[in-house]
Length: 110
Image (spheres, one colour):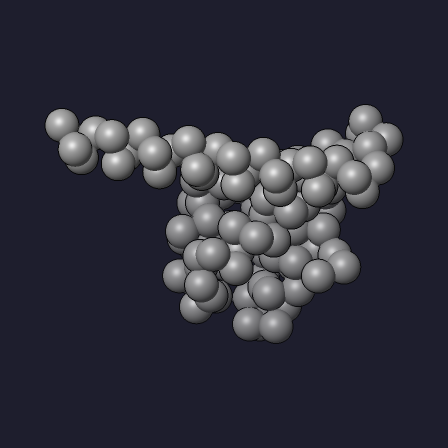
């Protein structure tokens, strides 16, 4: 998706016909803070992703993809990283999962 996570929340909110205050109440947030999140001046709290998924009836994995994709993009932009950085990160994820699976298998054998 070619929007920031804040813009995504704003889009979801408007599509559902919710005011900023209504969504803020449902998320247990101050409306000023939610406005800052929607306008990319403050980071959304990842602990609230579950609530957000329930409010908008979205799969949590879809929200995680949008949220963490946004976080990765911001870090890459901040450090002027190339697209190659994403490929390296993907390789590292595969490696870490492999190590985690092996560790679990070794623990199960004990």
